[in-house]
Image 1 (cartoon, one colour):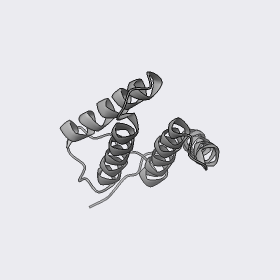
Image 2 (cartoon, rainbow, N blue to C red; image 1 turned 180 degrees about the vertical axis):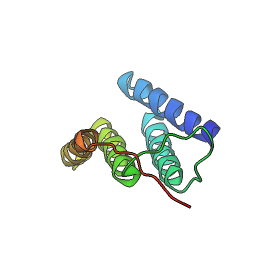
Image 3 (cartoon, rainbow, N blue to C red; image 1 turned 120 degrees about the vertical axis):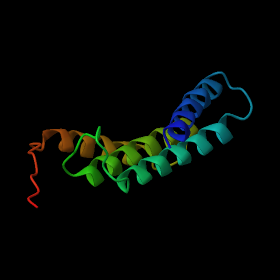
Image 4 (tube, one colour; image 1 turned 30 degrees about the vertical axis):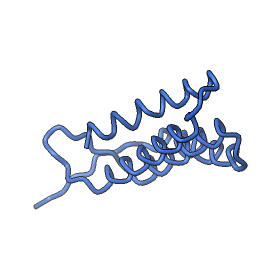
Amino acid sequence: MRTIRSIAIAGFILGILFKTLHWPGASIILLTSGVLTIVMLGLLLFRKPGPMVVQLQYPGMLIGALVAVITGGLFKIMHWPGANLLLLLGLTTCAAWFLIPQGRRTVEA
């Protein structure tokens, strides 16, 4: 799963490079890697915690905000409508998540 996520993020960066240099195929690379990144972030929600996992409070809120930011960035790069709203919602939610006190949850057996 890490490999796919790394490939998706690398593809997103390459897509931005292609789009900046106006090379053909940039739209397909950006769209494919953006969707793949969002899917990998979604699957991250359902993963079982392992021994080296940091426990986050409200992970759904953070991952939802990241999906909105990635989608908004993709929309902004592709000049599609709705990009400003997605970026506004995603970045505001990310900022709100960082302002929420991150308390530790204890589970008693």
